[in-house]
Image 1 (cartoon, one colour):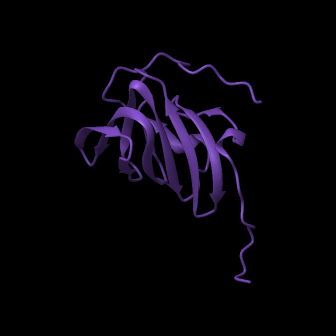
Image 2 (cartoon, rainbow, N blue to C red):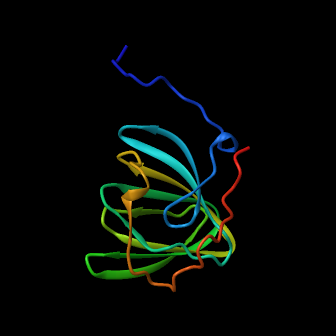
Length: 143
């Protein structure tokens, strides 16, 4: 035994809760340890998230489906990149970012390090695109 306090876990994405992330995207929190957590995010076709910056966590994203444009501002440098299936991007702590779904929307899996601490982690910032309409996702009912 290695002294671990968390037993191995298994979760199918269809069993994960559906929530609205602080940036307005649909999120399904998956598994977590204190050192990191994983979630699946979806942004609808043509929809734009609110711009935010994380206070204490880093993230790595991997695009599962669709495409989007991702704006990031770090240390005064702005860049917009296209992200498609198979693209992996990093969002270091303090980086401002905003995402806009492509023609079919986008599904992303994200790893957050350390684990996501709560909604006050994401601080609103001025974004690249016009702020989206509030509530572009209907708050889903738990199944």
